[in-house]
Image (cartoon, rainbow, N blue to C red; front, top):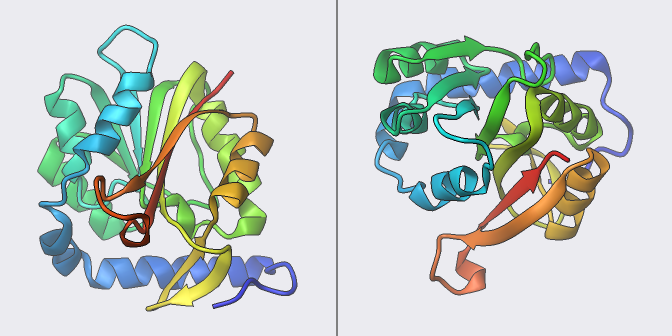
Length: 213
């Protein structure tokens, strides 16, 4: 897996989105069975604990998948809206959580301005190609209220980019990811590695919490 030598053309961006979404759509049920019991309470607490507004919060679960975390946010009393590129996931999320769930291409977002107190992007933003990431992060920032919070968890790496098991992804280093967040105008609150309590070499996930000024 290597970074593209040349910028990806619009038709290539459309293709990588279609192929990645198709892979998730085709494996939606097995994905749900394999992830429904994952404990991401540390990540949920990191987002909610950084929000300065008075609860209940208006939250966007960006890349909500089948709705596991969307349901958790709703059960905690917040107004939670899901968004996923996979139509199958969006339908499953609505059924599982009872919440609204939008189907949107991550590279063609249509988000309301200054609406959300927090955005929860758990294991999702790494599917955005590097060349498109500044724009996408800017669109997420625009959807946050002033002082709103973005949580992200991504598989860490050495800035590799490309296809892995029929899904397109980018595996950022901390330095790279920080650069993208700061360029988008976010202020870093904190970062940590997961799963918690393991040696660094057994912590493949980089979690970070950011504030919109």
